[in-house]
Length: 248
Image 1 (cartoon, rainbow, N blue to C red):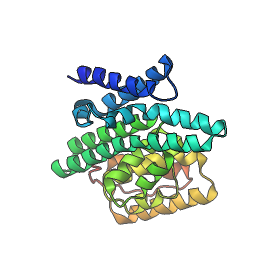
Image 2: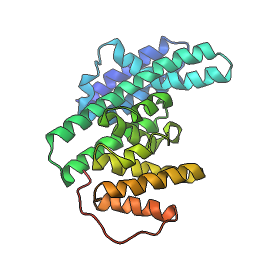
Image 3: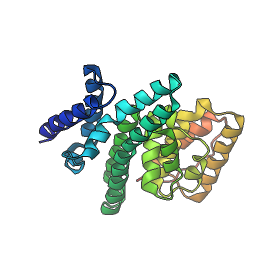
């Protein structure tokens, strides 16, 4: 079923490409890559993406549009670049579906290793979306500042995969007072990935956030491991004493 839908998506995506300013076979292959990403990210949810309508054509072309926007900017055609970039932002609709799955999974499953594993798979789906290199950094950063945990966690997954999307300033609050242990874990994972690019002020701010987080509640083994690695890399000796809470 997924294969058949993927073929249908390819046909729609190719039609969309040949209707734009780039009518080459190479462009069609680029769009097919975008469709393949949609299939890979959503799996059996692909039937919810309106394969028969204009929405899929826009989504399928979004990857190509973002690349074309960058090329337009380089040529000095900023108007075309902004128009193409706006169309590429449609990819964030896909991230929205991942966030919705996060919310429903978290609400339906009891806390424990099984739920943590299920949520980790959703974070990896967000990372897969980001690895295409077509996500709009401003939109992803807005999600990291969202009041909704599912959007924040989706943004964390995307930022882990694509350095272009990262935003340090919104990160310490998610370590200090996260919506959940799971969110705190992925915020610390992202902080560790960013550590080499932080200046002295940012490293100090991260240390403050980690120290404050320790006083809030015990950390389970996964969070404890990442926190200890961060403390070690920030040059602080660790006191003994370990929590035993679940990380999901």
